[in-house]
Length: 150
Image (cartoon, rainbow, N blue to C red; front, side, top):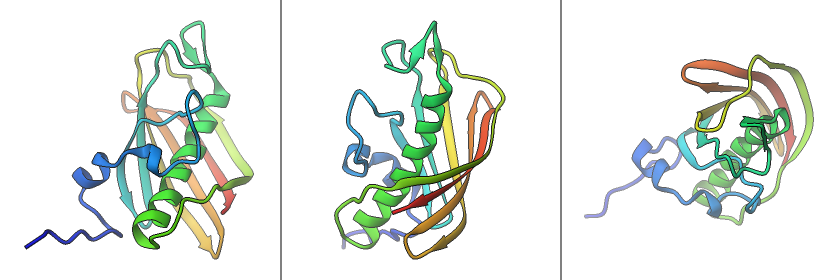
């Protein structure tokens, strides 16, 4: 008998096995996530390793803009997952409506593995508000609130 998957709260091994390119509208070289680590209806975590060939790396450091794009793409992973696995629909692009209280404490270096977690603060129809935390080596690099329209 096949295993049933609870798509609203899936096992991490299932989530981590998903090809993220099936969930994102973004395409290389402008992809700032490598893998979805966690998904539930209230949060999503992505990861990626900063590569020296990344178009947003300068002098061995990932830019602030890339960090914000990483947050946006983590939101896109969540939206893409919900569209594909819960609603059985095509992925839809989302649009950032506002970025509030962005605090950048530090920037990651080439070789750092970055983990980004978004937590849903509010969701109404096609509008979403999240709190994002970006970390490396258990150190917070960035915190912000983002409002999106899907």
